[in-house]
Length: 145
Image 1 (spheres, rainbow, N blue to C red):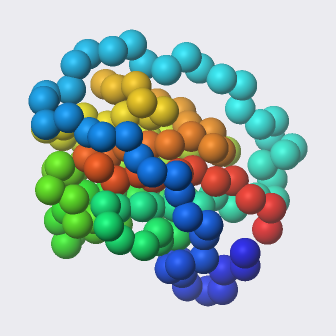
Image 2: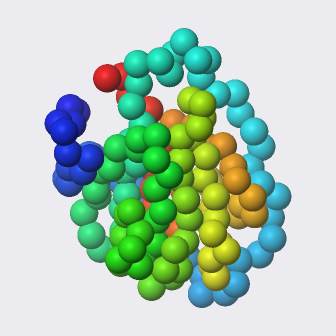
């Protein structure tokens, strides 16, 4: 898939498998997912980072992550606005720092999960990880330019 000057192109990704049911209960405290090895700096030099966002009952949208942090949430003021009642107005921030991709919960009511595990502080994600915000799934993809 090739993106032009626009940061956003909808409907360019393959469909996701069905999502597991999400409870209405307050998230329980679980340990953060274990750290994994990230790609070496040489392998990230000519890559781009995509966020593939799937909201309940909506088509997948694709966003390219640049150097600027991206805030995801229900508010129109967010960089990526999602229509998910389980998400907070400003729910999570995703940013690229020195070749690393970091996600941080912004004090949301329902928490942010990485691969099913609740995170409480900034956490490094890698290509293939799934970030869950309410009922919305954000898949992280690192692709060649």
